[in-house]
Length: 274
Ligand code: AG3
View 1 (cartoon, rainbow, N blue to C red):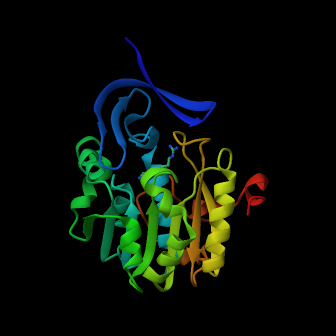
View 2 (cartoon, protein in one colour):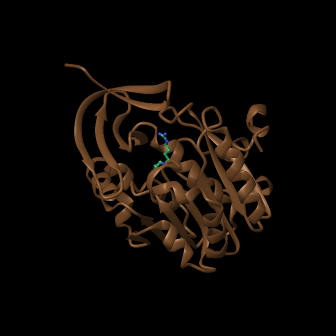
């Protein structure tokens, strides 16, 4: 019998993948967690019915969340990832030699556990000595941190369920406080086709808190519409003004020096949202 998984990306549109096998299908304390093997994209982590990452295209999202802000900051030393229990962002963060400490705060310990088991090439670096893994509420962690981090990456799910409060203005205020005086943060902010209002709202909120606010995109085939956005809030360093000499050699599959700049070039219907 053929098995297919569909993420209903809107009430009337979805993405479908043929399933080879289901490894995990479990209700955790926080969300429904499925780990499946798909024919086209390899192993896939699904939370509350939404595709989080796949073995085949994970590199796009993880490289773009990590490298764009890390290459904007002159010397990222202390880095925080909120969410991201699969470990993909951490793996990319560790490619920057200036990073001395990378903290991961993931609310759902089972995401970490199953990722280590079924997505080892993504989660493997969680064992690195520079990494501290905390199974904790990212919102609370931010609320209790002050003047601590150079770069913060918010690798959340969508603004439903456990991540809803990670899209509120109060959270960005907390992030600003948790960052050092020249800190930078980035958050994944969904797509312009199905959630344009979210992009507009987050950009406006971040702009009211951070002197420099920028939006960039990447092409991610398994996410809704494939056109994904990231919002940067920065206290001093402008990603559009980074000198090329800052870029050091790094082993990537999507990020390049040209992409670092080009990602900020927005289609008209996207820049019209800001
Ligand atoms: N975090 C963002 C996933 C959003 C996908 N949305 C969806 N499928 N509707 C991904 C976590 C990867 N580390």
